Image (cartoon, rainbow over all chains, first blue to last red):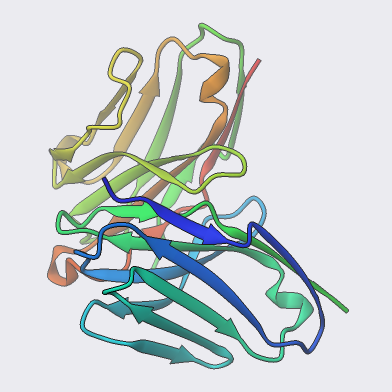
Length: 111
Length: 115
């Protein structure tokens, strides 16, 4: 069974810093990996999706990388802002189109 | 394009009571998912529908949880009887088989508190 782990569980940084969130998964037979953002009391918003054949995806200040063979992904956030404060979830999609989620990293950006 | 709708947004019940949640997916999305998210954890898949058929319900506690998706559109998730450990956010998501490996779109969730 696929297991997804995210480190760190919580992170607090001053505004303007660059930061990296980590995600690891145990089964490399995935279709894609996705990073989501979750704000308190709200659903999940997709940030970046990386297909299994891709190495990275970029959107604005966000860059996600995927190393399928080692079962790792990172989400890089450049020049962090207070509005980036949220929980970031990593999820992998298996061959049955089912998502397995990590436990998330709670990010606080201090003004 | 309207998003995934869920109701109610909040529900407080006592243990051993019954509760039902409703989800309306994005129009045209054939695949519908129900997730349970306990505080401090990531979402856990409970059940996946393709149209009105069940694709995966391996993590659904079938002794107390049930779900249906009549006519392949709306879906309801029921808990009967509820236990304290069922307190969680229940998220509904949908996706289109035309992009089967693409993203799922999530609703705002129903926050359940069992006392």
